[in-house]
Image (cartoon, rainbow, N blue to C red; front, side, top):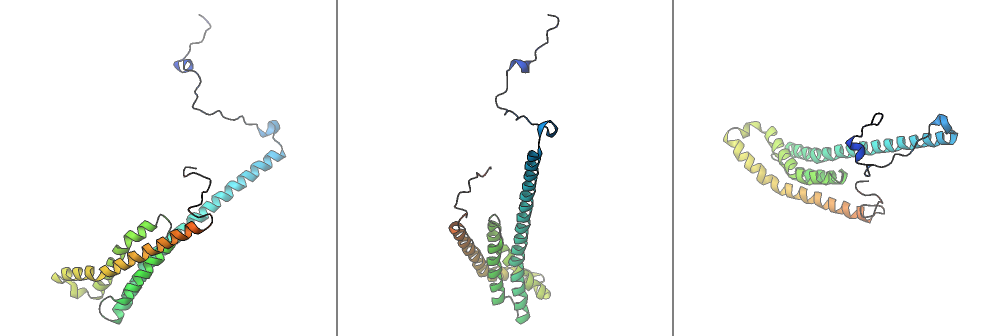
Length: 196
C-alpha cells in the first residue's frame, strides 16, 4: 500500500455533469496572429460602443424622467400662481396647467414611469392647489380656518384630480397603441427573451 495515493470523497463521486467544459485558449505568443489580434480589437471596440450606447440610453431616460417631473409639478404650480395673481383662489389656469402637466409627464415618461404618473397626479394636484392657496393667504388659515380650508381644498381640487388622471390614462393608451403599431414596437418579437 505504500506509494498509493489516498482518494477523497470528491474523486469517488465522478465527473460533475452540470459544469460546462471551458474552451481551450491559445496564447498570442504560441500562435496568435495579426488576424486574431485584429478580431480581438474589433470585439473590444464593439463592446465599448455597446456600453456607450447603453450609457446614452440611460442618460436619455433620466432626462425624460426629469422633464416629466418638471412638467407634472411645474405647470400646475405656474397655473396656480397665475390664478392667485389674477384673483382669489385657484381656478381655470390651475386646472389647465394640471391637466397639461400630467399629460406631458405621461408622454415624456418611460414605460415603467407610467404607473408613477397616474398614481402621483392626484397628490401633485392637491398639494399644489393647497400649497398655493395657503402660501398666498397664510393669515386666513390659522386655527379652525386651516381645517375648513383643507376640506375646501380637497373638494375644489377633486375635479381637477380626476381630469388629470383621465388625461394621463388617455396619453398612456395612445402611446401604447402607437408603440404596437410601429414596426419593431412592443408587439414585435425581438428575438431575445426577457432573461437574455
